[in-house]
Length: 412
Length: 156
Ligand code: SF4
Ligand code: SF4
Ligand code: SF4
Ligand code: SF4
Image (cartoon, rainbow over all chains, first blue to last red; front, side, top):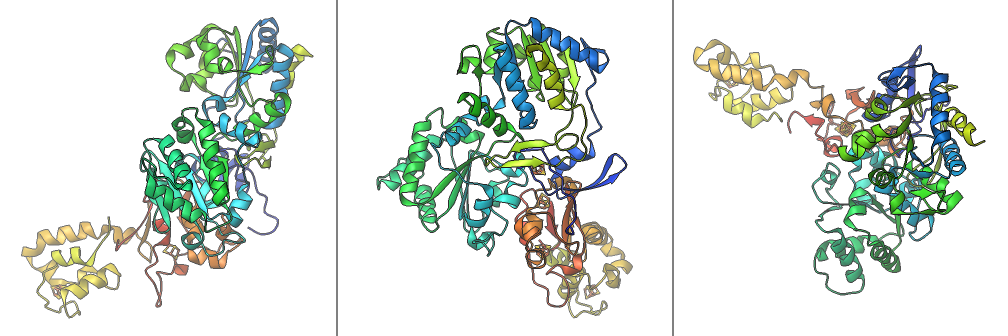
């Protein structure tokens, strides 16, 4: 509130809101201000459902769990490291070094999420922008295949559509044009009112095609009115942005060339940027750190020196390619089909996680760690690529960097 | 559910007897919504047995009035995800706190109408709302930008 208020950072999603005020009552968060419901709960409930060090379901001392994990990693002939979407890049880097030392596979959720988009952005195949610029300058705010109201609750109110910015002082109704393209009328789509457009898409590729055709002055098969209108709006301003989510990623069915062509075409007649709208707090961080080191953003094999669909974590499990997995801050048992997740119970699964999960229940070794934003700080990369210093409520000695450094001793 | 004068009117005696001090039942209905009158002031409704059923229905129908804030704004916390849309768009906030709320950030003042705390929106000071007081206007900006209907107004 006043000049010396301390603001904490929420790592609940890739918005990484760093304007959270917290009133403490001893070690408990009593009041969490400005964070959304999901973010607030992370602080309010951080003591609940915590993981404990365990070996094969038996509670052990922390040190014993570390030793056991080191032993399993040491004797592993084929190791996969997975997760890391919610830990700071300082810890991600240690995990990558461990993977390198063990010639292991390494992957995060982005292989099935927005990794491809992040890669295109990092390779400069898609022009991109930061949220600060979006807030100050953007006119057309285009959400494609994403429902930020639910997956990124403060995205619109903090960064894009609603806040007033330097060149956008008159508020959303006059200074912004909202476009929502989705297969269904999502909560975000319900915000489409004056000076806005909802495009109900059942075929994303046809919408891509419509934009290309309209710019080429040809008649598209579908979505002609939508494309004409959106392009016309884009031409009214010198800054427009498309935020693409999972719906777009799957809707394109791998036809990224077409999508890039569309963005390029749009930029012949207007100024259009692209920002991936992924959900996990530091998914993009992992992509960037791995990219800096290897030139690839995910599903990488240090043994083969390349990235391949075969090295995606789920494929590795499906094809019985690994004898040991190290899963950090992720709950694949909850998201995978049972046929695949049951394999995690058969091989040596080591889980590093601050909380109990389905995966900790089946793991050979569980090592508890710290919750980002609550007990560990560090650096995370927001979905627009901006590095955010995570100011955490407390700092615990036992955090992901510490745990991973200890596991890395195996390859030292 | 919105409370409308028309729905209230339908349940009143519709005799225009003026016992409530209003010229017509319709104008009494309007004042009920604005909370300038209380239902009990329509004495026939409470004294005459033939209105018993209508009376019960009206009491039930007007219940939200008691829960609503001065301006008729109702917040349903269970529907709120704390997105902050309402806080950022409120024209009063934009004017009073341009670099906090108005810019999408944490508020820089406590003199606000709405505030997100512990993940849900709370009403701080309804006196500041544009729907309040003598020169009130029928602002609906906060409600319009809440896609989960966590904010509603009595009159719809
Ligand atoms: S929008 Fe995301 S980062 Fe911001 S408070 Fe909510 S969960 Fe946390
Ligand atoms: S007292 Fe009741 S019946 Fe008579 S005018 Fe008023 S509202 Fe109508
Ligand atoms: S009331 Fe609606 S708009 Fe306001 S914070 Fe809650 S969900 Fe968002
Ligand atoms: S009705 Fe208007 S002035 Fe009142 S809180 Fe909502 S947006 Fe603000």
